[in-house]
Image 1 (cartoon, helix red, strand yellow):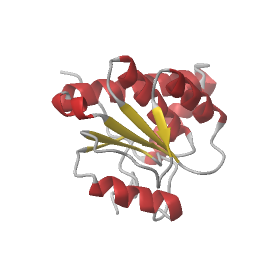
Image 2 (image 1 turned 90 degrees about the horizontal axis):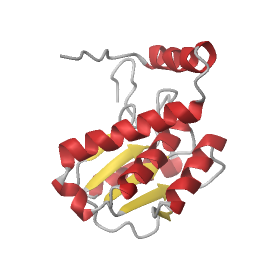
Image 3 (image 1 turned 30 degrees about the vertical axis):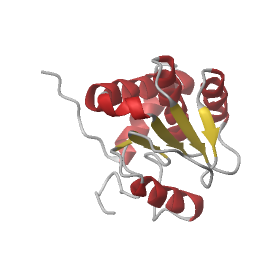
Image 4 (image 1 turned 180 degrees about the vertical axis):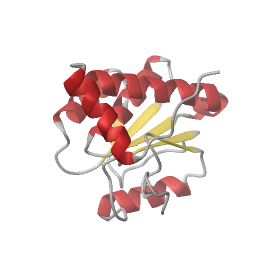
Length: 168
């Protein structure tokens, strides 16, 4: 049996830093691994629901980059995937992965555009570096995701949950 430790937000950030700086693993490679793992977990846990499509809501940071990899991976499996892109400048790795997702058939929409009725929703809005209550587009996107009535799979952890204390 594999045991996967539950990390605090600071511990997760430190593991990422050590991987990048100590082992020389580029952040794009870390994103690729994370996004593919999320896609695998969705396929394993929600396979039948994927036939109705998957919505991936992506923030502007690296968590959103993980989401774009997830979207691209699922699209490569033949799943109908829609990615929600928030307004504003995204990190370079996020932007590169969004471009790849589009090239692989992921439909990209904004937070107020038509989303359809997905069978699974992915929360890739905020990751381990988030603090405080979600605001603006992120808060309204979370509310809209919850109204979809589909299971929500979070990358890193649910947006709005403090990943160290568990406070909402």
